[in-house]
Image 1 (cartoon, rainbow, N blue to C red):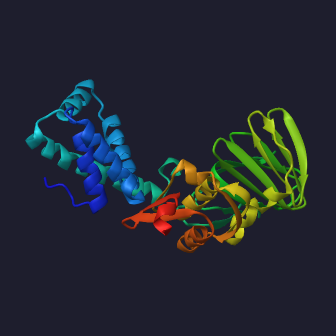
Image 2 (cartoon, one colour):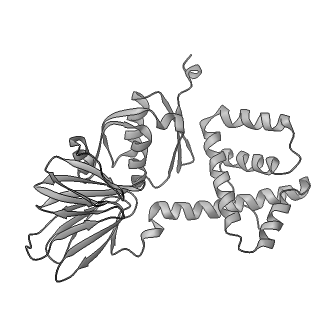
Image 3 (cartoon, one colour):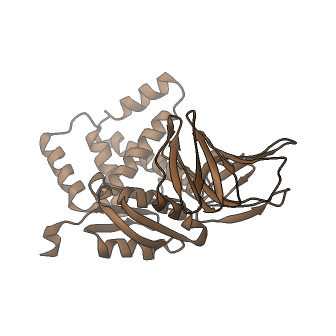
Length: 322
């Protein structure tokens, strides 16, 4: 089987992977590799892609002897190393197909009662008349009984407009705690091992880690399994996604990129140095190229792409401006 063609940067990255894994690499080769990787953000992005694909391919080998054979192949002479290069290209393509499939539709939440794909916001009307809007790449399970209306947020964010029912409280639960409606409109989101609740109209009660707090309209709070943070009016803007906007109050660029990823089918990579930059502003979620360009113009960053599906964000090299 002939290995499929890859973009030039990925072809180079595969060749470097084969050389560096050959067991006969010289110090000069490592120096040349580092020079290549650092010469262009697209090279670094391509190397990360290949490295991830190879690790994923090795983890899928079920038997020990398969892993041993694969490892031994990395030490073969040049002629057989060319065969390995083709195998790596195929593995990369297979891994890329799986990754891109997940970027289209999150595979881990396919069993959810209600869910959205990448770049998709969707509104649902529940059996009691309550309305839920899911952010991109979000998922919930709905469990209504005679005594309680419960929505379990599995991923992403949900915006709830709750119909009145004095006999059945309306609760949105996450892995970190739960939010009970005391009024009508609120937002709950989960990411990076923590949750966030913000109130648009009326009030809610948030319960987590044995603590509880009532939030009023215009307030928000973060919470996890250990308890509640302090109410913060700035967190109320966390619900801006409902209107297609991302509103940021002095947040790290890495947090901003995390909020953009659900709206882009490709992969966005950001270096740790760039991720620490602070951002303030409002950005459209439905036009990611425009948002990225706005960030590029206002921050000392460079943005490059590998093909149409991989974006790399790095600190701008001052030497490039001279």
